[in-house]
Length: 78
Image 1 (spheres, rainbow, N blue to C red):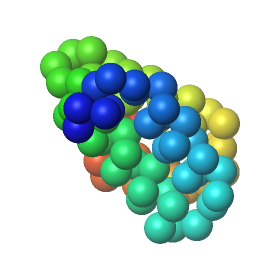
Image 2 (cartoon, rainbow, N blue to C red):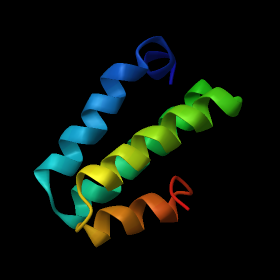
Image 3 (cartoon, rainbow, N blue to C red):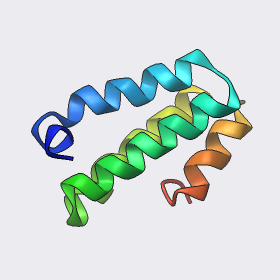
Image 4 (cartoon, helix red, strand yellow):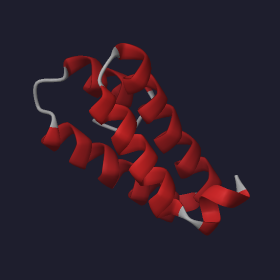
């Protein structure tokens, strides 16, 4: 968790790479990374960072319903 707080951009990149790799397990891993980052940073700032990146992933991959479902399940998309 300390690593996440120290370098959130690294973890955002990891989440994006997981989504790029495709596959249900990778989508779940990407959502888990973002949810963990939200928790690590904490508060409103953590929620803002995680939700913004989840929204960017959903916009980048509008047809990947499994990705969007994984993000919604973790409370990152409305």
